[in-house]
Image 1: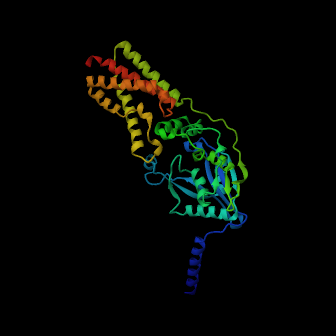
Image 2: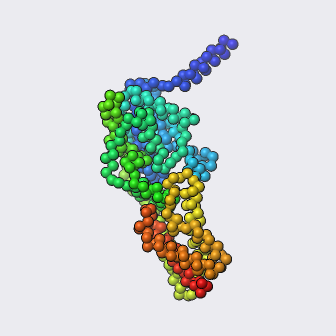
Image 3: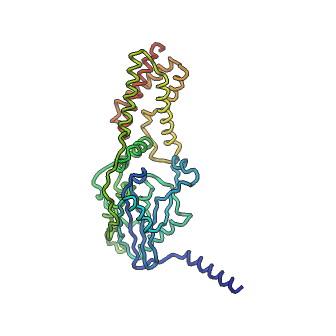
Length: 393
């Protein structure tokens, strides 16, 4: 009984000790880590941000990483499509984190924050509180709540918004789409996917504060930022900058068949079909069934992204002008061979296709250039249908 009693006391003591907040020593440092881009996966192209808390007196050498997600979480792909994907804050060993980025030849730079002991303690406690199971998950948003913005917002929350960012740290004016495009030069198909799925909100001109959805702009903003002391005196936010690893130069190959080349080839193929039809007085109905099925289903998908998900950036998608869901109605007329309705339907939609082509560069959404030849295909096929069925009018 005596031994059991002692054991119970030790267990209770350890529980209290485990739950007790660690007080950082005067040797503690908190750094913002910025990792360079990679080209293995689409999300790697934007780089990464994290916090590094180092305190040798307490045996702490942790990375606080807001960019962790779990492929095994229930309904992963459905939640991703609907905009309800859970990301979380994870705490990792610093050495393992850095070794990963060095292995994949991605640069690592740290900015030591110019915080006093009390400020470091507040930020550390904020991160520890976020790391609790009940707090560590959050709904990920591409541009407004991600691994980079969480770095900025954690600091502001912990330090009562005493951090000021110098707006002149950016010397250009870009939209969110343009900022995204800058990081996807070697990911042309990924860039295409983003441009087709996301609409007008992407073409909003970003403020310097909004630039910080990207890790490299977190680095640049923090470099020029200041923090206000309690006496009102402002000091630089960053005390020191350390280059942990400088990525080795490497040649990155881009696939020969970029979206632009591929879709112009598609147009040329349809043009060849059109010439054959015209010269031999033929009409290949199956060509239009396939083409307008693809466009109609794509348009339906874009509508679902707009109205059926939580992706704010998917709203107002003007790609619907050329990927028109009502093409599915025309598909019904094609299958049923309702000639008069086909003529009327494609005469109207042929005019709309012509209008889209003529006004392409005046559309308020920055349309991906690879979609232009697809709009031409729709114009070409609409003309062929109405010309073939004109006698049924």
